[in-house]
Image (cartoon, rainbow, N blue to C red; front, side, top):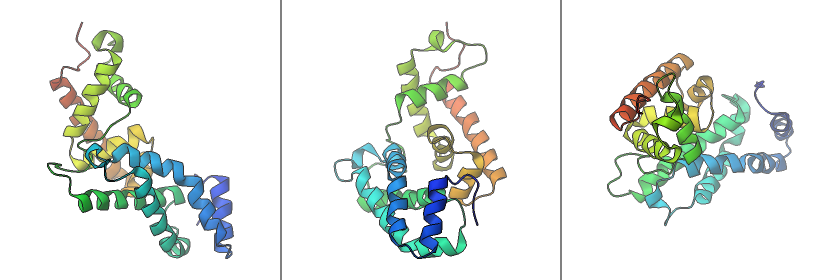
Length: 209
């Protein structure tokens, strides 16, 4: 099955791989390595970084993807980049469990979200008609968004990360999580409501002078 959102380069490499050109698999993984690294970097607990580098998790994910490639080519359950992203997330969960970070309630509680993306999300959640520059300085706003995201449940936080920091659609997030798009949409809406409430408790409401 060919997915329309698959880039031409990926489609060509998948076709070559299906025709028995094994080197196309290495090229596929190389093509998506930077995206995987950003995904892992976004989620890797800061307390693990002395023991685990994002590149280590990426390498584990790619080795696992190579092992599973024949099955992927038979079934084509989702676009290749989403399939690869799902494997990387599985390896990240394993890394957190393997190193058992003390005091870490769940994955993502102590992650370093990008300042710019955090601030943009905060501005989007401010009350309509408010001026972000009047509400909070951007850097402070980003810090409060990071604190609020850490308070979300695992499921809600993952939806916020996928939608707002990785720019996945609800349908793409649903494919990665193994849920239907309607459920993904409901989960995302719930996450935003919860996030807005937490931000309000931290003084981010858009009504400040």
